[in-house]
Length: 98
Length: 395
Image 1: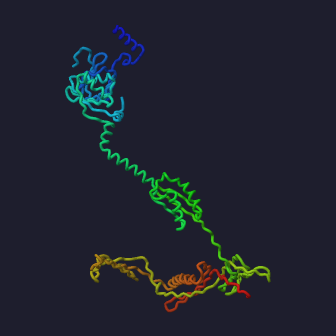
Image 2 (image 1 turned 180 degrees about the vertical axis):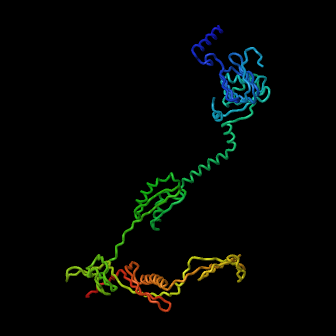
Image 3 (image 1 turned 135 degrees about the vertical axis):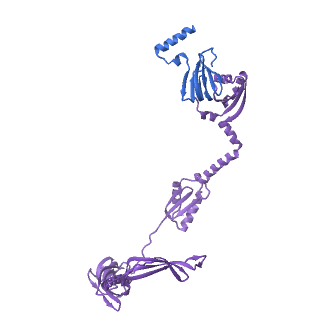
């Protein structure tokens, strides 16, 4: 049932030319240079240190690696991270990450 | 995202979260839709973040459920600032008191200026004004506006035609125009107008009386010009004759000018030699080669240097050597005549009234006599010649 709905959504997005992040509940990531990263549609913080931010997504996780991280602002679905960003990585559900 | 200043207005606190999994605490906060920002990672299991003051009460509960300990490390924003200021309330009260007193003092009357009034009116005005409450130290907003003051005071003071009231800052300015009752001219005794000089009538304007002469008529000294008796013969009325009679007169002035004065004239060429004096001895130190002028005039200058009122033994001086030019006798005489003319005019103007006008002058032949130029100048002068003379009864 869940699989079917997902397929339907994907099909609708493709056919009706709708933005993917709205339809499919995907994260939208905005980068400003390498010092600001703005992530919408996250599902919570898993891990936050000075060098790493790990966010839960609808499917899998998002890993941001860098230096001097500060969470400037955090809201239920948005997060603004400041620092020197070196790497952004999507991690599939179940895998260990690194 | 909210603006930072909103937080500053409502106040916020910095808290330290210590626990095995502080991210959980943050997630819980977000789930409750709390504002949380500026999250720093300090070390393992320790985070620092900012939380709004209104939401602090919820923190304890969240901390309990997420197995964390929280510690308040800083208080920021307006409520805390106000609290801090309140501790120094003397300063605040001082500031407020200062502004209030500044406002009050600048709204007080500090000066009353009265202009254009005689001492009597000034005194009256001062009393009236004081009655209205305008005095030093009175508050301006308890006084009527200047326009009202003006009408009240103008009504009260009968000796003034108009009193202008203006307020300039803290000063009230009263401009008084006093009633000026025109004085009547004193009645003059009836009389004639007679001539003071032998003259030709140049112009006449008779206000009152019967004119007896015409323009261009020659009159002798003492002749009656305007009669004070008017009306039919036998029924004459006596009036004070009044008028202006201008007569043309002649005057011959003889002026002598010494000729020596004009013999030399400086050409404008000059040379300066500088000297330093010690005592009476002059040591030249600049200007060694004075040019060769055929005629020379010298001008000396000596400075006197004083120190504490004592004459200094040495001082500075210079000598100007001016080139002079001999003027030939003809032009010397011409110049002398010019000088004589000036002198003559001066001499003449003393003899007549200040309204006198010199209408013509003629230089008669100048004669040179023992180093003097004697010039005779003929002047034609227009001046008032009328003089009042009372009518003597039975005359």
